[in-house]
Each structure stands twice: as structure tokens, then as C-alpha cells.
Amino acid sequence: MILIYTHKITPRVRYIFKHIFTRTLLISVDFTSKVEDFVAHSGPKLSYTKTPLGNEFFIKSNDLLFEQGVNDMEIVIQKWDEIACFFKTGPKSSIPYDIFAASFYLISRYEEYLPHVKDQHNRYTAEQSLAYKYGFLEKPVVDIWAYKMLAVLKEKFPDYHYKMRSFDFISTIDIDNAYAFKHKSIIRSIGGFCKDLFRFRLLNLWNRFAVTFTIKKDPFDTFDQILKVKKEKGIETIFFFLVGDYTTYDTNVSASKTRFKLLIKEMLDYAKVGLHPSYFTINNAALLKKEKQRLEDIVNTPVQKSRQHYLRFNLPETYQNLIDLEIEEDYSMGYASCVGFRAGTCTPFYFYDLDFEIQTPLKVFPFALMDTTLNDYMKLTPKQSLGRIRDLKNEVMSVNGTFITLFHNESLSDFGRWKGWKRLYDSMIKISMI
Image 1 (cartoon, rainbow, N blue to C red):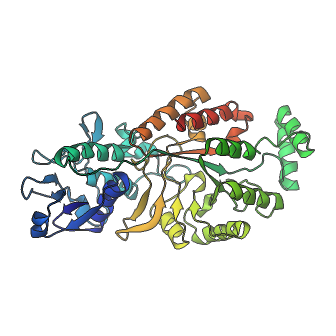
Image 2: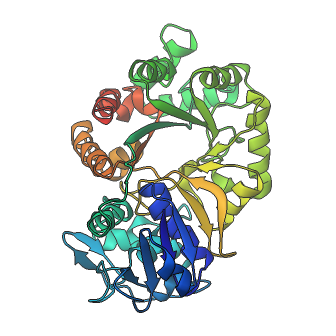
Image 3: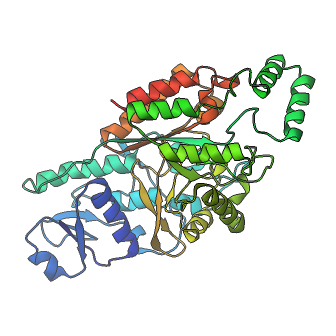
């Protein structure tokens, strides 16, 4: 255990110190604001305040963790060795930057509370983020900073026993469209047929006909493949099912279809299942509740995991709605247009609500990459994508973090724009299990 002295123990201080020490470095901590207790402590200790008390391990504190609310601030990015960092400390500090304040800024998504311009889907964009502007989006800097501090701590306290966490990999699959052609309503099937005919898409016409009359398997029905890889490699896999009503942006099979219900139950037998809240749930608590109840009625068990469709969420409103519905884990933390680490970390963390200044029970699992980001936004080939995936995996592995990927069942179909992506998924699994 390391004792932390600070002149004021705020919720922000408790939150970020426990994330860095307890969840990232596996070191337990305790806090005190009494100088005499700190001086009397014989074990490892650290002071986080404006001036050192003696010759202890000292980090000069930025004001951020002692404030409330959100204020616009000037942030100067500099280098700590080769890694970007900010909130410079001074010569008396044991490390050159206040990594606790910097980590809190990134993990709380402080910048997303500041005025910003939304994209066409009402999302905060990667391009507005500090990490994108200064070129560290593809590095889990919070974890890197933590391990750099750990190296200095080991020099200061060489007799303390330090545990090391292990690298983890989670494959997540979003089910936006369980089937390309099967189990759609008659109106949607006829409409799709007419659209293909009008646009002279003969291959689509043939596939639609062949699937409808069971001559061939529906191309998006890749669930057996995903489960086979899961079983063979022993990887954790989570399916997020979209069960919302049909809209322009929500085009899955109707949740009232028996075959779709059976598919969800079958996946639950072999993997974990979560909710994929529909496009318009971003600020609609009643709609979110309706869809959660719908999925729970199908699986007959409480739904505790969630990922927003189109990655549409507003902070803190969307997360507050998830918490009210007793969702325990969210997997939406990532960008649609860029790969990398939206919150600057590859370690799951609890959402800190800046509105109420509290750590919430909602655990956020940040993902590193999404298939549609690589294919549709970045316009990369499967071969090019594998290189980017390998680089991201290596970044996570270097800090023994959690590497989370986001694919769709349709991207494993080798159908249409997804030609070659099934092989990419298999290759990604192989390199992630090394």
C-alpha cells in the first residue's frame, strides 16, 4: 500500500489515483490530508500538493483535481522522453508532469463537455480532440505515463513488491443486420428486389433470389464462423444486438421474428450478449428503456452490457440514462472516423460524472479499432488494416492493457465491400493471441 498525502482529498483525486494505482498498476492506496500521519508512515508514500514536505516522492499538483465543474483552459503539449504529455510540474517534482491531472482530463472526457461542433450524426469528432491534434490518439498515453511513473517509483522504493497485470483481448461484434436478405418483411424484401432491379445490380438480385429460396446461405449469417474462432482460440466474445424498431438508421430484422429471437438465445449459450441501443436513443431514456426490456424479454436475464449504435452518445446524458437502467458496462468509447484510444487509455475505467462530481458504477470499456473505420473512413485495404491493427495491439501489449476490437457480423461475410475482411478477422485474432 502507498499512502497519498494531499492538502485536500477531493472526489477527483480519489478517482484518478485509484484508477492509476489500483486498476492500472495493481497497487493499493490510502489517502491522508494530515501531515503528521504522512510523516509517521513508514511504508512507501507520495505527496501530491504544491510543495514537498520533505524528501518524499513528490508530484506537484495541477489545480484541475481540486476544482469543480468544467472550465476552458490552455493546455501546452510537451514531450516526456518520446511520449506527449501536459501539465508540466517543476524541478522539485519526482516526475516532470502531473500525470494524474492529465489522465483525469482524458479519461473523464473533459474536453467533450466544452463547446464543440457535432458531426452529421450529432457526435463529438476525433478531429476536435487533443489526442488527434497532437498526434497521440493511437497511443494509450495514460497507461504509458503510469508505467513511466512506476519505473521511478521502483527506484525510490526498491523493496516494495510490485505485481504486474496481464494483456487481455476482447472481440466485440455488433449485429446491425443479422441477415442481408432473410427474415425481412415482405415489404422490405420487395422494396430491396425493386431497388436492385432498378439499379441493375444483377449479382445482388441473384444472391437475394438464392437466399430467399434457400439455394445458398445468407451472406451475413457468419455467426457459426465467429463462434468457431471463439472456441478454437478461447477468446472472450461479446455480441451487441440491435433490437430497435425500423428507422432509416436501424435496419435490423424485427425483434418480433422468431428466428431472430432464437439467434440471440443461441449466441447467449456460447458467448456474452449485450444491447445495441438504436440510433435515436442518444438522449431518449424512454426508448432506451423499451429496447433494454425487449432484449431482456428475449434472453430472460438482466442486460448489463451496452454499445450505442453509430457510437452516438452525449456526455453525460447518455451515460446517465444507462446508469438509471442499471447497465453496468458500456463499450461505446471510441471514434467512428479514427482508430485509437478516445479516452487515452486501454484500461477499463469507471465513468466520472462531471455534472455531479462523482464516480459512477458504469464501467467503460474503450475499444481500439472498428472495421468500418478502417474500411469506410480510412479507406484501407484488409492488408493495410492488419498493419494498423498490429501496431495498436503492440501498443496495448506494451502496457499489459485490454485490447478491444469492434467488428460486425456482415464484415466477415466476404460479401460486397467486405471482400477479404473475413481473412483479416482471422489474422487479427491470431496476432492478438500471441
